[in-house]
Amino acid sequence: FGGWAAASIAQSLVSIPSLPQIRAQVLITPILQFVNFLLPSQQQNKNIPFLTRDLMTLLVGKYLAIDLSWSDSMLTGSVIPPDKWMKYRKWLSSDNIPRRFWSQDTQPEFLGHFNEAAYLETKHIFHTEISPIIADDETIAQLPEACLVSCEYDIIRDDTLLYKKRLEDQGIPVNWHHVTDGLHGCLIMFDIKFLNFPCSMKMVNTVVSYIKSI
Image 1 (cartoon, one colour):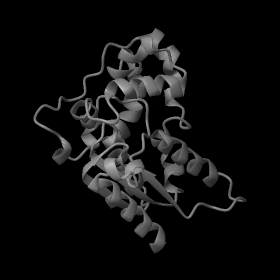
Image 2 (cartoon, rainbow, N blue to C red):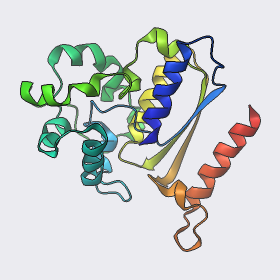
Image 3 (cartoon, rainbow, N blue to C red):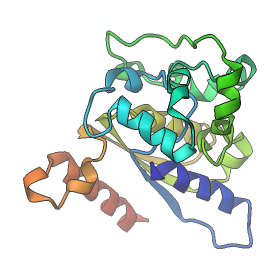
């Protein structure tokens, strides 16, 4: 889940011109928002190791100090006030995900009935430090170029696709690599012989090549 922290730090640094600026941001299968859990990848890959929906829900609760009793409200979008959805849907809606990433079973977003109590317990998900993808256009436009890596079989795959569009819409160069046989967490196994996946080395080589090129 470190991706959102890295993106948030990059946004913070651009607001302090006296500090050395980041040359580039490299985000590998990051989670970049905790608002919309109804994206196509959330539906398609909820049972894929190594990040299942149950595990993701547990980790989100731990990271954000949200009681697990509010998990269903978060997963169904019941924590999203209608006015906030009107504001952020242009950046977070499934409409921004290319149709080639939709399966036949993918359902359009239909937010659950708004639950004010759930919102009050989870409203910090709307802070840009936690969901950096919802930062304003002026902030996004100041960010450095990016190398983004997404995996097909990853429950948070679509966060990368949404962020890619946000950056490109503001004229930020994006070097995007999509690993069609990849799954979340496979990168850390690139040097473990008995658990090595072909996708692991693809991701390592991609990132190394990008860093050498800048």
